[in-house]
Each structure stands twice: as structure tokens, then as C-alpha cells.
Image (tube, rainbow, N blue to C red; front, side):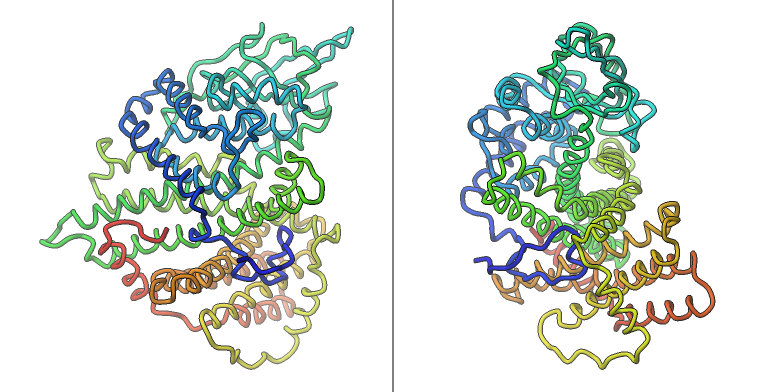
Length: 595
């Protein structure tokens, strides 16, 4: 049972404590949720995996057929109400479904783009007539959806879009002109969410049907990876869009675009972690099979390092993802209880935790990149062969650091959103920052006498929070408005903040798991949590030093460097033995075991 606790707001983890009972672990899944997840895995194993090569050859008819089958099972409607033909599940279940689909490679992208950015704008921002018209056939798999935001000259800077919409003299329709690129599912989508400038400067969303006169589709893009997903340009030439197909409000298209991205970011994390687990498992099994110098390569320390590091990054990032997912789910229930509509509640919850979603997008995609890169390395020359799973997975993984906003943009967004919330009074950073400034002027306090599981690590995390507040507070005070032009410093600050979230999430989830299963059953999870925190402290120290050295000098620099040293002081662990312990557990099980 969850304890009664104030729901922390987005970003508030930096200045407040979370009770372990309020985070999510797999034991929290209900019997019904496990049945839905099992059905998803069964569909992927029996219907998708056997036809993977055909899908990857861009067999669009097959993709459409399989999406229809998914619709018949209800797997296109798990985020949608029953009144539109949906099979609505809670947020945690949908995250698990997204993770499961990762094993289907390009098909997961077709499915995710349809059920996510393709359909959610209509659910969240459409009026009742729009939802009743478009959602039922999309949920059933009779029609398919795509999301048209990016243009040749506007990627991360989406609001600079050139596509325009002009209201007709009689006020019955808008004339739409422009082009969109990198549109997933464009080759077979029937319904597009399209963003255009009304009157030249009012960024606005529209629902556009593919069969309308003036809509045309470009050739399939030749991509580095995800070759089985359809990616094309979409052109609009004097397309008459009825005024009733205006989505949301004129000039408020940014609300659609950015809020859908918040959900897309955490769902991307769920997907890439599913892919990371699969690559970890393949790496483990190959390390057990491949012999060199008369022994399995899994017995080599260099290979054990890679296997353990893969697992550690997966486990810790997944703890953070589950934490955010549970927070979003709890916030949805709160907003519904407060009288918000379903769409308002779902949107409001995702928007509240936009900082955490951005963190997850970055660290999840970089976890997958690590697993793909080192997985290929474990396979050696065989990893470079197209006959093995690693080569295409290596290519497929790379797009995730670009999807849903580049990792660079997302890093800077985490800091920007935090500072804006602080300026609006939603988070009080000033009071703890001033307290830490005073603490830095005093003698270090005595060592923590608290004992118990992760007592030392909790002290380290507390100090990392002080580190962030000290470094960010001094940096903001010195640079003021110029900070927005110092992207390197912003990314240093973002990485410190992100490491804090991941470290604390791992401690919370592992503590709860130990309370459920016992510490002996969680030895691997305990080891990985301590291992990650040990290394994260070192990374945070470097980020902090780089940030401070970028602007400070003299006594100011010396004082801050002493603060960094104090707040990152820790007993360095025997990470070699810890990684070997984790790797041996994986090799003995011959699979990724930290579910």
C-alpha cells in the first residue's frame, strides 16, 4: 500500500524527499496488467518476430496488416477510452506495452507513432466531434495516423515553421500550403496532425486527411536505420481544410506540439529500455557461447565490465522511468479528482513532469546506444555482419538521440524548465541555495552516523543536491541573462541534475524491492545501485568543475572548488569486483535478470 504522501511536483526531487513506498516496481503490477503485457509479448513473439525480415524490407502492406491485427487485440487503444473503442489501461501498463514492442524493431516505431503522436493530439485537443469521427477507426486499425511537425528549415526550432494556413473569405476552410519532412508512417497514414502558421505567425494544429485534393507524399527516405518504418515528406498545395478540422485553438499549436513531446519522451525511454534489455541478453548469451583461447569470452574481465555496465545503466534508468511513470499516474488521478477532463488530466500530468521526461529521454537513448555499441564490440567481427542482430540494432539505435528533440536540446530544456518554475515560485530553490552557500563558509559537519541499507549512499545523494544548488546558484548569479548563451554550462548543470534523479530513483526502487523480496534476493540490484552512485559522483564532480571553471576565477573559483570537493567526497568502491559480481549473475542465468 502507498503511504499518504504529498505528491512532489516536477523538479521538486532536488529539494524534497520521496518515500520508497511511492515509487513503482514490477511487483506493483496487477494480475490484469500482467495479462495485458503477456498478450502483448505473445503477439510480438508469434506474429511480428517471425516476419521481421519482411517488415525490415519495408513491406508496408504487411505492416498495415499487423497493425490491424494489433487493433483487433486492443493493442492500438490501450491509451484511449472505451467510448471511442479503446481498451484503456493505466500509464504504467502502457509503458510496459511500449517496452515490450521494442523487440519488434521498426514495427515498434510504426505502432508507437500511430498510437502516440499520431492519435494522442486528437484525444487531448480534439473536440467531441473530432474524437468521435477519427479515433474509432484509428483505434480499430482501419485507418492510420501520422504527425507532421518537422520541416526542411525547422527541426528543433519547430515554431519557425513555414507551412501556412489562410482562412477563406467565406470562413468555411483554411488553404494549407507547405511541406513536412521525416514523417513516420507517411507512406500509409490516412490522417495527419499538421502544424501551420495562421496569418503568418499563429502556430496552429489541424487534422488533415490524406485523400484530400492537394495532399501528396514524397518517396521513401533512404535511412541509416529503422529501415522497416515508412518515412516520407508530405506536401500540401492549396489544400482546403474545413474550419471544423482546426485542432485546439488558433495560435496555441505549441501546446499540442510540446505536450505531446513530453509523453513521447518518456515513452521513448520505455521503448529504448526494452531494446537495451534485448541487446544485453543477446550479449550475455554470445559471451557464454563464444570461445577464445580455449575459454568462453564471458570469463574475461573486459567482457564482464561491458555486460555489467550494460545492466547497471539499464537498471538505474528503468528505476527512474518507473518513478516518473508512477508520478504521472498519481497526478492523473489527482487532476481527475479535482474535476479535470480526461484529456486535461493526462496532459496536465505529463506537463507537470516534463523535466523528468526530458531526463529520461536523454539517458534512455544513451543507454541504448551504449548497449548497442558494446554489444557489437562483444561480438567482435561477427557483430559487424548483417547476419547478426547487432549490426542493424547499432544503426537503429542511433535515431533515438535525435527523436523527440535532440539530446542537446533536452539537456538544456531540463535546466530552462527548472529555472522558469523557480522564477514562478513553483519550486523554492533560493532558500536551500542560500543555506548551502552559508554551509560552504563553515567547517564540514561530522560524518553521518545513520546506519542501514543505503545510508551512506543517501548521504552522497544529499550532497549531490547541495552540489547542484551551489553550482547553479553561483553560476546564475554571475552570468544572469548571459547563461542562455552558455550551452556547455547548461549541459553540465543538466547532467548533474539528471545524475541526482537517477541515483535517487535507484535507491528508492531498490529499497522498496528489498522490502518486498528481501535483501538477499536483491543482491544484484543493491550492487548496481551502489556502483552507479559511485561513478555518478565522479561524473558530477567533473561537470561541476567544468561549469565553474567556465566563468569563475580568483577567490570565487577557489571557494567553489572547495565546495565541489566537499560535496563529492566519497569512499571509492572496488568497482572491478562489483562489476564482476553483476556479470557473473548475468552469465550464470544466461539472460538479463533484473526485471
